[in-house]
Image (cartoon, rainbow, N blue to C red; front, top):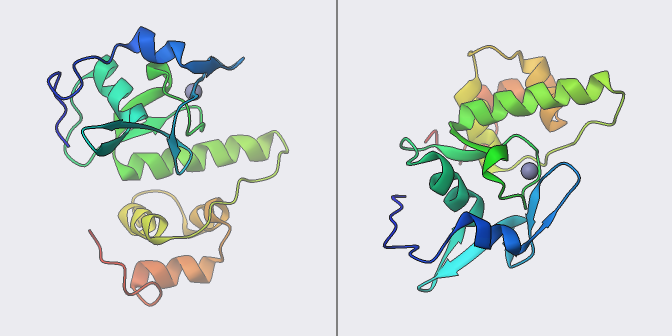
Length: 161
Ligand SMILES: [Zn+2]
């Protein structure tokens, strides 16, 4: 997705911020439309992830395939200070780090539901550092399931890229 100022001529960070609820953590929670809990912005009949737009406004063009990653874990947040461009692999590694920090604070693990995005992410990070155990804990699934996903025995229909 290539952004251009022609595409979003009117968007200014300060004006977007004005339509947000500011949390004590300085998240800018978008009060407009949401899609899968992400802030959504519709322009010319197309809907865009607004966190990607504020990330672009503040940090410039993403590399191909990059996601706008939240450091705050708050999908509705569009504060560019909480966003950076990164790969899907970094996204998962970040999530593992956060999961570990939660464990240290004795809070309950956030259990992400497994879906095709998760399967792709697991395959993308396989063998790059995190253990199957860490991946399994992150997603609330068994070690065996992680192995089977990586080996392509489970979720066969999800293509690798
Ligand atoms: Zn935030």
